[in-house]
Image: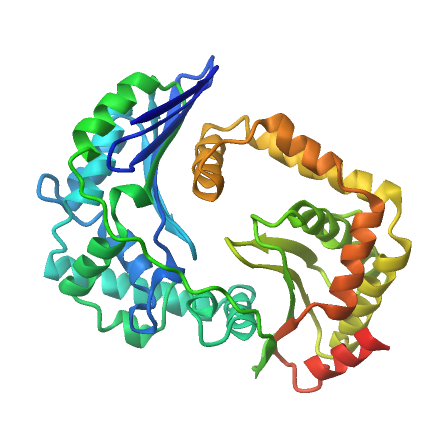
Length: 426
């Protein structure tokens, strides 16, 4: 067992590898507590695609001790909130409750993770729910286009597959499939108990030892390295808008350049004062929504630009987007970089006012580095990004970075990726 104590921030590791991190927030009467499991869509085989998300749903459908209704009532009877989500690299189960109900919340979370019964009738009910969720996503252009972009960026890899999974896979999962995935990926060393707010670290450690200390470590799972290949996908459909998503390979969250990538994305298209918003929307009126963002995973990342416009204006929008990317490499100003740095720091610091955001941040940092870097360290890394750094990064994005393109709607005459690549090179 190992323990770290830094003022209100404390860490502990059980002998089986189960990690605990807490942050006491004085003045709060509530706490957010959750279990973050290093098992997401990226840990699936092609045949398992969608099972991590299916498992997240099934966790709330009954245990050896509680029915599905009792799971919900146990938290809501005390005025709390319980939920979960699945991403490509993690599945999280969390609750927010008042201080005195933290032991109850942890007991419920442990119960749904360690004692699910996977009742066959409930599996069929939830299968129907998830198939409806898949259908809803397919009917939402500005959702599904990002799945298509991910697939083009990372073809034939778990990183490129959807989190929900295809309907045909979801339709085939059974109880043994769910149990097998749990057995392979829900070991103690893959779990992080993170809590923030009105929490007592020592009490949580004692409870965690009782609830999770008996677990046996599982063999390590070797993730295949992500390969950003790039490519183009377009689907024509009669819609009011043509949807455009353009992605470029960028740093993963362990890369030293991750803060440069995030500041670049913010300056390019992160807010109303950004270049793309001002040039494409405010000056030319070519769209209602346009933004850029830098997403990151363990060993890869993607800087994404999204916009929705009319079929007639798609060509202009796409070309101006490339032109703005190229221009950023030569005339990005210190004022723009300073504004992006300020936005990034403000977002970080404002987020710390929420116990939910703090608990998630702690879990993510433990997952990435197995430690909690001091806030001052993160702020200093953001402040260290220079205008020259951003210009150099912008040059890579505009010229060398592999690219992927997804188009949806009335896009028959939209520029191809090859045409946009030629404009990048011009």
